[in-house]
Length: 128
Length: 511
Image 1 (cartoon, rainbow over the protein chains, first blue to last red):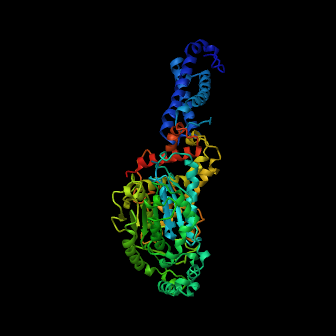
Image 2 (tube, rainbow over the protein chains, first blue to last red; image 1 turned 180 degrees about the horizontal axis):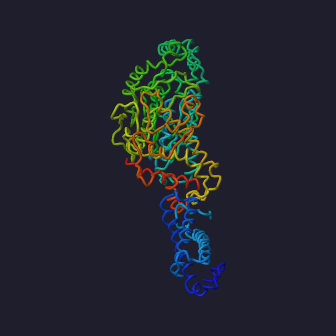
Image 3 (tube, rainbow over the protein chains, first blue to last red; image 1 turned 180 degrees about the vertical axis):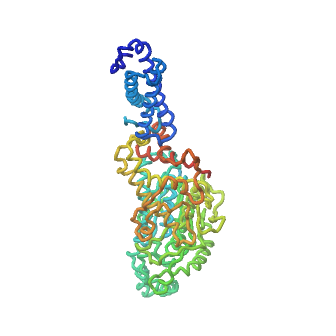
């Protein structure tokens, strides 16, 4: 997991990150993004054509990022490091930010995989 | 045995107008028990505006039919729009211009020769001086006695000979004519006598003689400006229509009843008012509901004793039909039509045309649209022939036909659809040549109220807004269409539109 988060380094709390911080962050990223991608393509993408626009797809990506951001921050801060909100240190904020950026990248990659299972947004975000 | 061909003789201006309405019915996908329809137009007035309009509509129809159904067997895609093949009309070339007047045609002056005194006397008894000197280039102007002589030449024309050569054993014949004019009233009995002559010298005479023959006789349904007749500007006097009709009906009853197998009569006491033209390019009468009913009689005739191949197979040698409405209303909508198949087809076809005219172009330009991409349509599909043909038929012929049947000049209008969607009604009224495309504007809300007195089902709540989304239906069906592997992109599009619209109608209307 450390390699996956190669942008991020916190030597002071290395063991905590190594033990569960990275893994929990990654699981949040994976589960939330999968949820939003499936929600977009398998539910809304088969139900109604009004969601089949790049704008709506982007909106779902944005929602995913917000949920990943909040979940990562709170779970890493409260559950992993057992901190109060005002004591969440800079590295956790940084990790949250990186996870949020990854969330959009994952959302894009998952979109390419799942778009074929939809009806209306089959050619969103890119046509191929 | 394969389905029969239908040879459709359309006589005079009314014949051509009924043929135009028939093209609209067939475009709507109404099922017909025929392999193809071969229209035979008989009109001495070769420049007649109605004939020209009919030619254009059938050409537009065939442009679409040929693109989609070429090489497809008869039983496939039945009920789809533009399904029945209509051959380009054969025009039985008896141009009145070639004959000049009746006097010229029969070489009247030669009757002065010795030995022709009685013939000349009989001729003078039957034909007035006006009859003899009437130019034949614009038809017979309500004089069937003149027409009965001139139209004899029809059977000598190469087109008629082609018809006799092509005629097969189980083919059928149908004759469209008006009873109150000149060309139709003269041509119908003449054709019947030729077809039923037991000693006929025609090619395939035995087949023609034993063929199942039907006819529709259109009784008076319009009147023309009498002022022009009184001032001598026109030779047509509509005040004589009823008298002529009575005389002709009496003749038909005595002489034609035994010859015809299915005879349809349509007419209307609520009449339309037309301008008075002596034929020619100016004669472009607007389409009328009566012409639609006459056209529906052709569809009915094809189903008449459908298993019978010859007149000998028929259960009853002759049957007579009339068209009636339950209520005498001035404005007819779909609810007034008794034929459910017709209702169904017109409803589907209207939604089809609305899509073609207002939504299809935008859809074809949407690069992310699922059905467009599933069908692998090129980015310039909206400028390719198939879409152009569809758009032309819709904007130039279909909406105009609806507009014409709904005009105020008809005492009985046909107004099945809300025509407030047409933006340029004033311009259309002035465009007698019919070259101006109809412009329409339709909002999403309007899609629910397109049918007069029959709103589409709407499931709307405070939280969700309902809309009729064509592209959504098409996108749901697109992959199924691809699976059919037609190998013809235009056919794929056409079948998708047919199926998609059928889904929309099934969800939104209870018929």
